[in-house]
Image 1 (cartoon, helix red, strand yellow):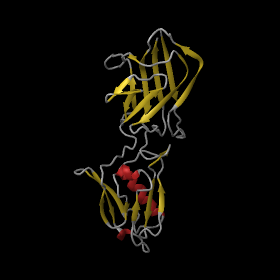
Image 2 (cartoon, one colour):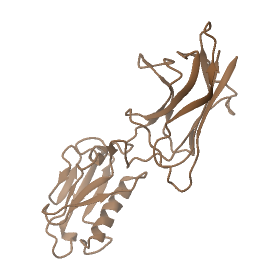
Image 3 (cartoon, helix red, strand yellow):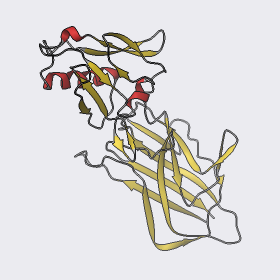
Length: 267
């Protein structure tokens, strides 16, 4: 006999559903499996929204702040970047907008601070040119250390205080949530090995630029069916948790969109 466990987090087009897709599901009546049999499961379908931010402030992780100054660091102004999926150019645009809002630039389209990527060295470098400052400005400075954006850009010395080129010390990690998401169901444990160590994740989905990250069986392309996997599954289930973790073990965060998990428990 088999039973299906379904979980869906609904899409909210207003964007107000920013956050995790984690949830606890309480059964209206317990699901009882045989005490005399070993239990298995199969993944029917998992779909995740690809609206996965790299700059956000949530759950103790904050990559959303940058400090800037036009007077050699005597006074600092904090930029707070909206949650979102940002390229290097988009981060530079946010910095330039902040300079313009303060009236710090001679020309609005001629920034005093630019961010660039060197494809040969795979490093990011920041250029500071204080000659672009309006009268009254003495020295443009930028401080990435006020959030995790320093790590994203690769700066271990993140306070840049002089004109010229400042090359980051490490290779950037603009994908601050990593390249994959692990999916967990608390009712299914010990079904996988990762690098020789047992893992409670039921699957690992790559973070892609496609419309959806999904595992669907049977596959329309191959007709293959997901394998049945042995796992530690309790004989009675009255509730269970669905959890999504990014590559760094933090709760995966989404700007908006669906999460769908469909599992088959086999008695």
